Amino acid sequence: MAVTIEGTYDEIAIQGETFDMLAYRIYTEERMSKYLRYYNPQYSDVIKFQGGEQIKVPIVTAVESVESLAPWRR
Image 1 (tube, one colour):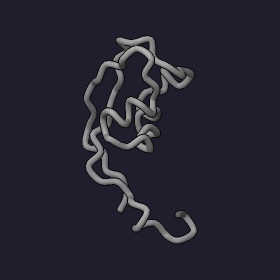
Image 2 (cartoon, helix red, strand yellow):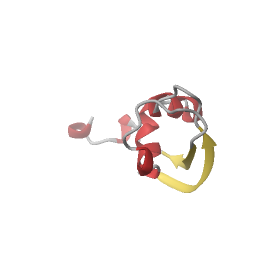
Image 3 (cartoon, one colour):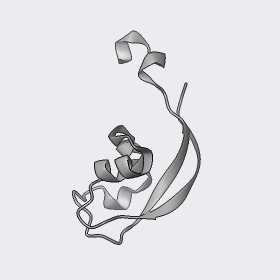
């Protein structure tokens, strides 16, 4: 199963939050931070947000799971 994105919405970053923390807050999984980074290249150099940044959040409806990966990709 591949990743399916069905649009985006805006979220406001909290002061001191990282991409990993933001992904956990939104998706409950840190590994989803790669999608947040991809949709927000203007913040690629940010380690911790100042707070108030408008983050574009992709709506992910299907994610490739470890079980569905080929053995050499696990």
